[in-house]
Image 1 (cartoon, one colour):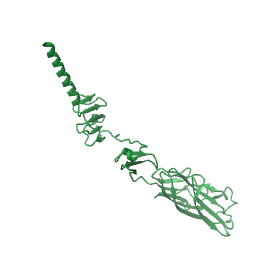
Image 2 (cartoon, one colour):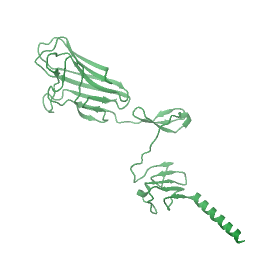
Image 3 (tube, helix red, strand yellow):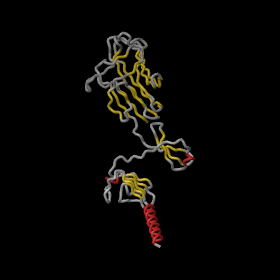
Image 4 (tube, helix red, strand yellow):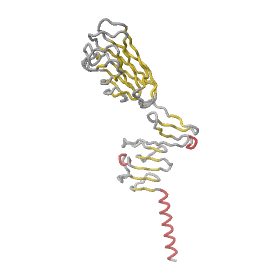
Length: 288
């Protein structure tokens, strides 16, 4: 009789414990706020503050999941009011859109990185508006500090960068790196100083936009007939180019007007902004 009673009491105790376990589970906390609740730092009071809940994980009765919040209002809620590090990391997959079904999202590491969503048939880009490249640079050196020898195409480097919103231009080397696939418009102006020697007959200055070290994408030619006196030689070149991500472009000058000046013909420039020789050599790059 007594043994039967003990067995019945033990069974009731076991069932009660099991039912309680299925009702709520708390880890590192006694004040359980959902069906399943983990206090990561084991720092909760009763009730936990928003700061303390910032390290909690909770599953509530309607199936919503909260990370950093104990009151999730959507299926996955990461909106902690006390923790600024609430980013959601999305990985990639090689599965087809049909295999994952409609509504799946993946990250693709091309064209600067992008998100795609599946409609159940194909992966489609989720479009955003990135910060477009916009570069403004100028030469700010002493007069004739930058020289170009006769009949040798050389990179124009040593730019002072006044604007570069995407950090795509290296003023020291004069190299622009395309941050993503797209169309970019380059506008370049230059001016050589007036030297004592006259221009060579039937001479020219060629400005070039050179891609990836050796491919001349665009060149602009400024020609001269026979000159009887020393003169300035100025010109400009404007062009739009289709570039792929990480394509590199530099500006080169090829002068054939002067083969006698020591060290080559120099650019007209100044290190003083309001000086007469300042502002003749400029470069602007705009992503369309």
